[in-house]
Length: 40
Image (cartoon, rainbow, N blue to C red):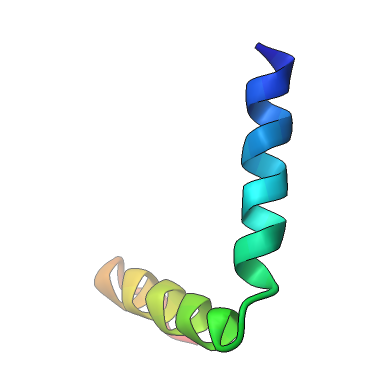
């Protein structure tokens, strides 16, 4: 079971290193925050 979490962590790091990943994540999180009424 711990190997599953390690795999997910490595996958997350790999995805975040891709070009444009941080901008996409920011866009996604802003949409979620607006949905629940939290303005940034």
